[in-house]
Structure formats: C-alpha cells, structure tokens
Amino acid sequence: MMSLSKEWAFLSREMYGQKFIYELAEFLKKQQVKTLLECGCGDGHILYGLAKKEFRGIGLDASQEMIALALENHQHPDISYRHMNWLNLRELKEQFDAVMCRGNSLSTVTSWGKEHINQREARSKIEESISLFFQRLKKGGLLYVDCVSQEEIDKQGEIEIQTPNIQLKGKIEYDWQNMERRVFGSGKVFGEDFSGGSATYLLTANELERIVKSQNPSVVWRPKLVNEKNYDIVCATK
Image (tube, rainbow, N blue to C red):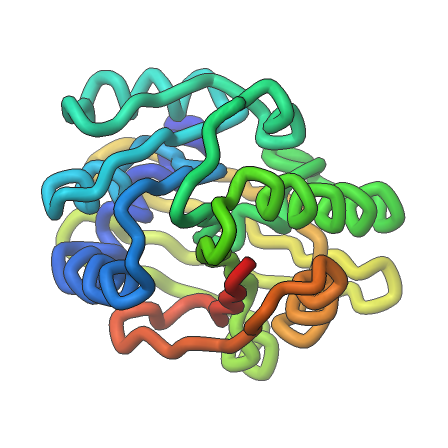
C-alpha cells in the first residue's frame, strides 16, 4: 500500500506541472527573489522546477521519506534538501529573499498523517511558524504561504481525482467547532493502491492574513495565480 507521503508527492507532481512552475517563477522574479527557502518542500518537485529557472535555495521537510524522494528524483546543483522540522528553523543561519510554505503545508505543522488535531496546539504552532519564517527573511524579503481555498470550503464533501495516472475518490469533512479539516480517500496512484488521509487545522485565508499581519510586515496582499486552483495565497513583504 502506498504511503501518505508518496501519495502526496505524486499527487503534487500531477496537479502542479510546468505551467504552474513558470507562473510561480515569474511572480517570484517580479518580487526580486533569487534565493528561496521552501518549508515543507515534499519531494522537491516545485523547488527543482524553480532551480531550473535560475533560483537557488534550500528545501526542508520533516518527513524522511519526502527528503529521500527529493534526493532520488529532484537534485540540482543550486538547491539542497534537509530533513528538518521547520519549527527548528533557528538552527539555520542563512537568510533568504523569499520563504515559501505552500500546498496547505502550514496547516499540517502538528498533524501530518494523524486522524485528529489538537486545536490549541495547532494554532499556536502555526503562529510560531509564521514568526520563524519572517526571521529567515532578508529585509524586504517575500513571505509566500497558502491555505485551503474559499471555493473548497463552499464545496466541501465528496471529491474525485481522475487523471491518466491517478484515480482517487474521497471526502473532505469540516469540523468548525474543533477547527479540523479531514481528508480521506482511496484508489490508484501511478498503479499503486492507496487508502488513507489525515487531519489538518482548518486555516482560512482571513485567519492566515491576521497571523501574518501580527508580524508587522510592510505590505500584505493576496495574489491570484491562474494555475493555483487549490489554495488561497497570502503574501507579505518584511
């Protein structure tokens, strides 16, 4: 049975192809970004694509399996990968033009692979994460984070993904009292069986923006990328 980490890595590759990477690269270039720290880099698919477009950076992930996949499939001379929980970012001395935490990764900070969350702990660790991200930014640097889209919130319920390589059916459940988002599904991913899911903190764009603003950035905005169809983005300049 395919693991959750591998399923997510393959799903991300399928959903975020070259059109998304090109659009993201153009957006980052307009913000004068050259060096990048990606927190929750997964198998390195996005960071590798950006490196091919002349960005340099580091990818961190708390999953040893994700880092192994990155080293196996997405090595590039201008990027490196580290098996590290981003809550330990104080161990890094470098500062970057941009810090990115995308794919709703921020919401999984305490719950990757778990069936339930601790609401208070999750909220606290998300706030701590945003603070740590800002510390790793150069003056004038860009923070890029995202969360579940309002469109998904409005349509919560049964989900189905059908591509030449992925056939999945599942369900998204929202528990507003406990601020928990649960996603479970099963099917085939690149020919392998998958069944599973996890819970994340139910982070909305409004709440994420409030947390970002608590760090007193110079500018906060919500950019729209045409090829980002799954999440709402919040950006800020240090």
